[in-house]
Image 1: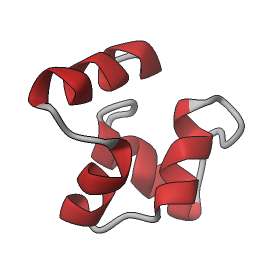
Image 2: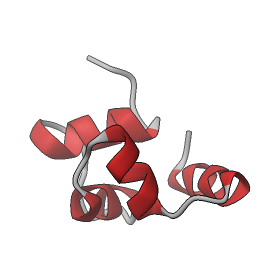
Image 3: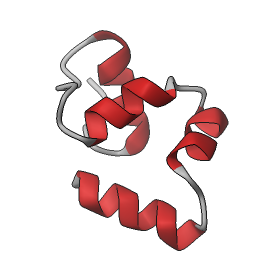
Length: 59
């Protein structure tokens, strides 16, 4: 899934990114940076956020 698709999916569900992050227990700022392309999601918290948002496959 692409970041645009993740954002569209959240909008379709009527959720904000912050609400979704609280539900799946990830840091909002980290998720925001991964969606905006700042955090690459290669390891650590950013990787966990990318997997939880559906941007990457679990390793």
